[in-house]
Amino acid sequence: MNESENLKTENLQLKAKLQKFQALQNENHELRKLLGTTPSFSEKTQVARLLDVDVNPFSHRVIINRGKNHGVYKGQPVVDATGVMGMVIDPLDDSSQVLLITDAKHAIPVLNLRNGLRSIVKGTGEASKMQLLHVTDTQDFKVGDRLVTSGLGGQFPSGYPVGYIVSIKFDPGKPFGHIIIRPSAELNASRQVLLIWPVEQ
Image 1: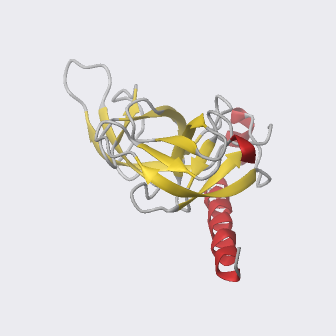
Image 2 (image 1 turned 45 degrees about the horizontal axis):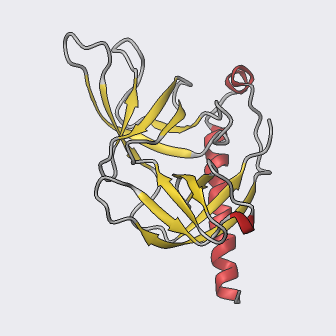
Image 3 (image 1 turned 120 degrees about the horizontal axis):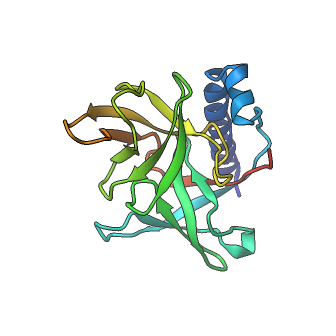
């Protein structure tokens, strides 16, 4: 790896750590106590490159150049410099398939940075579009709210940006709202990603 590649790798890792730092600054002590999480920047990471993109319009997946021989495992979190990209679903020896967060089969527990409310973001199968699930009109979610990983469930470490709310609509007679999320990650632009090994809280 030459000096230019080393700098790019270091820059990506620093940006990922900055994501967590910014998110943790927005959490108060009481909220962290309630969630049972503590600030941590000690996750092990490894840089990977995109090898291929699934061209199927109904499947949002990419192939990266790291696999079982590099310690990659099924369900492993994958982020880019701006947010969560998805998770590994099929690790081979030297490459892995990653399910992007916009895929209809992907769901992730999230936390609203503004007020600490928790919910789940699910892919819609459409590019750059996700949905916030099971939110009623009595819950305090607003356009522009930023959502980060909550850390619940143990799969994704807490504090990584997932997306932000771009529209909210409540239809009479329906129990939950139709809330659209735009991903934080640059899903169609990132060529380098970080694989994360979450630490035990």
